[in-house]
Figure (cartoon, rainbow, N blue to C red):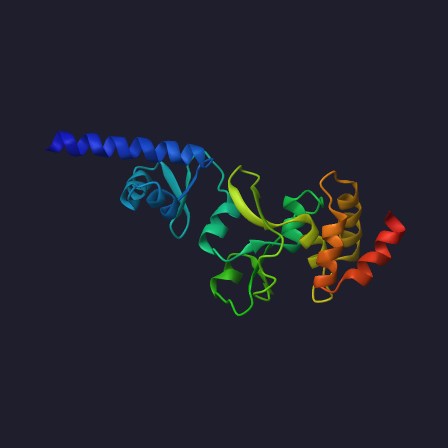
Amino acid sequence: MNQIKDKEERSKTKLLLQLIEELHGTITFQDAEKAGIHKEYVLKLFQENGLEKVGPGSYVAIDQFPDEYYILQKRFKKGIYSHETALYLLDLTDVTPFDYHMTFPRGYNNPSLKENNILAKHSRKDTYLIGLMTMKSPHGNSIRVYDRERTICDIFSKSNRTDKDVQINALKRYLTTAEKDLIKLMQYAQLFKVDRDLRKYMEVLV
């Protein structure tokens, strides 16, 4: 009986290590349980000094750096990377944001956001999912972020305080990318009521 149990534990531990490798060194209880691995195996590896705890239910391999983008989105599931953070992830700026900009549905609030350096933005429920896409984090894990067109509109919104130089440089970069979609951009711009300002700058830059 003990041999069967030992074999099962070795098998689960092996699966866990493979999963950690696939997730580029980062693991959460959610990831493990989704793969059919009980969180006790994560805790066991942590107790054996194979993992370092980096947040509630979040761990990273000892020889790896934590994927903060992935970890934060696992913890705050309704958050979508936006504004200056989206600019950085989409390579529309060279400025590394100090905070993590995330957009949530209007009415969402979590007291833990501030202590995790998350600058929360809010969107109406009917516009919250517009422009949503998935991409790889700098560590290679899947994260949710707004697309280029939504992000450009967000940073030009009057309710946002994005630096003017950051706005202009991001728009310049966007206009030189092969992935740009000007029809979509102007559709979004009308929806988010930034079309007048955007046209003004585009007339100069194009």
